[in-house]
Image (cartoon, rainbow, N blue to C red; front, side):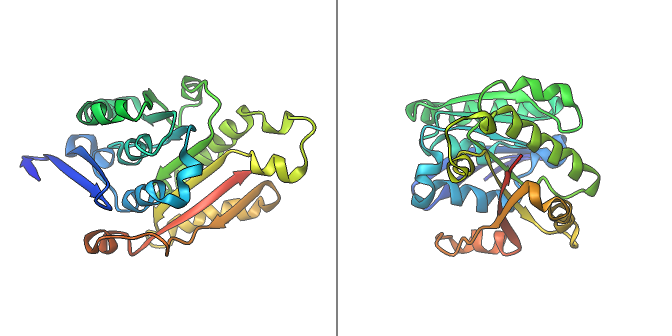
Amino acid sequence: MNSTNDKSCKEINLNNEFSIKLIEDAKYGIAGEIWNSAFLLSNLMISKKCEKLMKNKTILEIGSGTGICGIFASLTGAKKVYLTDREENLDILFCNYELNKDQIKKKNCDILIKPLDWNYYPSFKNINDKIDLIIASDIIYHGLNFNKIIEMIKYFSLNNKINSIKGKTNDEKLENKLEIILAFTNRLGSSYEFFDILYEQKDDWKLKKLNYDFLNFENEIIEKIKYSELFSLQYLK
């Protein structure tokens, strides 16, 4: 790792198969740092078990920060990946895309970098594709944002208009629902408050805690993710 003041460039290798370069930059605050649960989510996406989930899909990463998860997603066979964050944080995403664009292009994946802010509803319109999968890591850390994040998830779920498909059984409709995969590190119990809100609306949501015992991690990453968890969400309305 080369470091200059508060800016550093890292090479991140997962399973000796996927390797990317990323800049971290303190001037972007929390968006300029690689958070631990991002390693868990990235390892999940590159696993053989998730190959079907990722292949030829359009994926939206919300709260991308450095873009680590979205960039790894672009190497898994995804058709298109949206990297998104607040407008003032997009420069680091463009920078990290440039560092990895050659191998991304070899995978025939399109990356689009767009402003998307759960506090600013008009920004939702910046994503006008049908999204197959939403991914996010360490976005549920502040209770003030929980309801806004939930409203964003509802928006994209409803925007896909899956419920309007006729001639489908209930099981087929559920199978085609937009899935959201969240990785997070619980901080003083506050992250679980997010799920408390969802459980209060339990008829509207399918929630599943994901087991990741099948994943292989290097010792350094095991230490990073020891307090991290994975959940799958689907909005049923």
